[in-house]
Image (cartoon, rainbow, N blue to C red; front, top):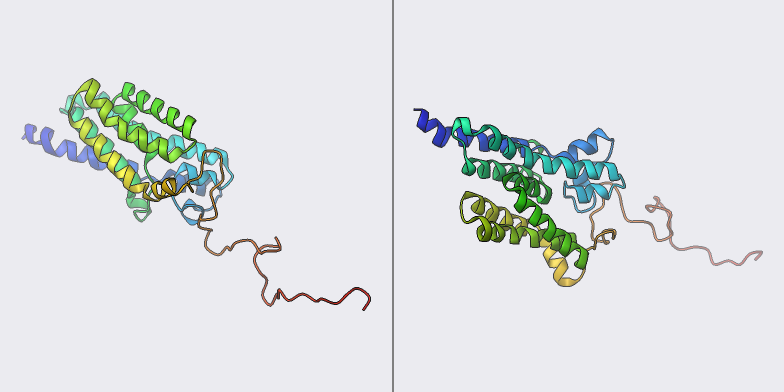
Length: 244
């Protein structure tokens, strides 16, 4: 009975707990707490730190980034620190990290409308293998520095992470989790990949282009810079000369 619990029930329960923690959409939670609009209603519609930054509130974006990373880091760290007494090893830690990542992508508490998962994946990798996490972060920084594309840096780091793991530490359950997360990250970045190929992707420090979706109930600026067109307003202005 004890062996069944250790081999099946405990890992499953731990993975479910990881998923539930990952389902905490901090982009939405922090925005609500700070009186900001729901990040799913403007910009790219993605509940992540990059889109929260488009609200103009840098503090909210930083908090979102930190907490999204922590919700991947903390569950895996807890398994690594306290799981051994329950017979939970590296495989369960990888499963919990994957669960947290999936929770971010499809959060049960927020109508399964999640983000792309870069920060959460980074937190998972750092907890699974701090040296691997540092290598992935270095890869991100190098690509971001030379290309100025955050999406390209994230995709490159995600793709290289499982190779780093296999080359240095060998195969195992961590590699499987890394490969699956990398594939899902590529899938979630499909739009960014298309923009990269078309040369229309926004660079770091550059505002999103006109393709960003405005919040519901808003519209693009009126041609005269006066905001949305007022009811009954006409573009046919008088051509009479002054004094005529």
